[in-house]
Each structure stands twice: as structure tokens, then as C-alpha cells.
Amino acid sequence: MKNLRIHCELDYIASSNADYLFSIQAAYHPWQQILNENLIVEPFSPLTFGMGPTGQNRLAKMKGGLGKLRIMYDATVAVDYPLPTGFEEEMSIEQLPVEVIPYIWSSRYCESDAILQMASRTFGSLPKGYQRVEAICQWIRDNIVYQPGASSSTTSTMNVLVNRVGVCRDFAHLGITFCRALNIPARFVTGYTWYRDPPSDFHAIFEVYLGGRWILFDATQLSPVTDLVRIATGKDAADTSFATIFGSVKMTRMDPAVTLLAD
Image (cartoon, rainbow, N blue to C red; front, side):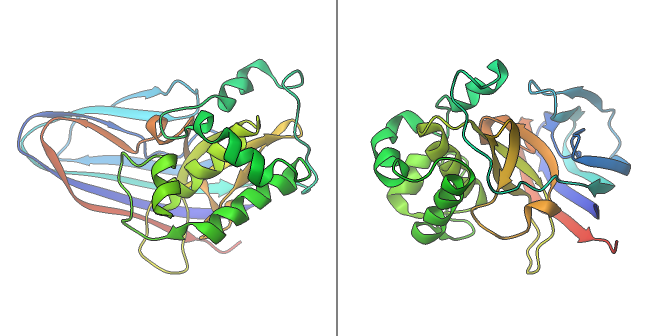
């Protein structure tokens, strides 16, 4: 088990009244325990809390006025990710739980139906299971350049395959898309993690359903998956945005800092 301390600050300036929906709190999840947390808004505005459609993503809604806005989240979270054996097998459609099957379907950022032939040519002959997903991650590392700022909120898997460059969310989307094209359920995970080299940022990885459980994979290898504090889970980035804003608002600073505490 590892303890991580989170201090996240988001600064905005609004030129009109606006509505905000934040997803920055650590998720309620069996692999992590929230030891303490505090969510503060300056200037004060009441928050309404709820859960996203997956039942894991915690949402905070608020109304803001003109001028500056800061939202701060502090937490200490104990993470206890159950390590896989590395021999988990892929499951047939017949074996999969009904609630897992939708994670095979194509989605907004993960156009798996468009790369069926490519996925089959590249990975179809490999032994099925955990090692095939690892091979997908290695292919992404070998063929896609990690470059901060290289993509935008509209970048999808097809864009990444054309441009051969992306950030963590693009690496995760590509891993998900290849898996789904091979009928392996996969989904998008966002969270906090610590980096040996700055700058601090939210992180995106993906998880795959193998051997009757969800297993985390990170094609970027920027940080160990055992050090991730999960925030949100979904089909892709469309389900897991850390902030959705309705109004004329500009972000001026984003600082999700994470410290790995001593055992």
C-alpha cells in the first residue's frame, strides 16, 4: 500500500456568470482509501455533489460569477493496486459479464471499428491475453512520439495514427482502440500521480478486462500504475473531463501536485 498526498489548484477568470462541473476528487474505489480530503472554492460558492453514470466518478457542481475563481482539492489517499500475475487470459464474449461488453464498442475518441484490419494484421497472430496487451503498449511506445501539447480536446485515435504524436490521453485512447478492435474490453482512467520530472499534470491510462478482472496499463510509462490515484473512469476522455464549464471562462493555472509519502 502507498500513500499519496494531493494538492490540486485550478484558477479561472470569468467574463460572465458560468456553471461549473468538476471531477477532481479521488474516486470511491476498492483499490484506494481516502484518508482525508478537503475541497475549497474561492470566492465561496455552494457545491452540489453527485456521481457520474459509471457510479465511480464524483462530480461537484457550482455557479460562479464574474472575475477570478480558484478551486482547491487537498487529499491523502492510500492506494493498494492488486498486481496482476501477467498470465491473465482474454475472455470470450460468452464469458464476459454483460456490464463489461459495452467497453468493446467504438466510442467518440476510440474509433475501433475503423482499425479492425490494422489491429488484426499487427496483433492478431500474437498469443492472446496479458502479453498481447503489453505488446500493444510497446507498439505505441515504438511508433508514437510523446510530446506535451501535441494534441487537443478534439484529437481522436485516427488523428494520432496519422500524426504519430500525442500525450498521455492519446496513448490511452490508442491502447483502448486496439484492444476493442480485438474484442478485448478496455476503458479510460484518469487520475493523480507523481512524476520524477515536472511539470505536474493529471494523468490518463487505460485498463483492460482480462481473466475476470480489470488490469491497468500505461503505454507512456511516465509513472508506475501502482502510484495512480483514480479520479474517473469511462469509455474515453468524453466521460472523464476534470472540468466542464458552461460560460465565458478562461483557465489561467492548473497545478495538480502529488507527493509520494514514505511508507
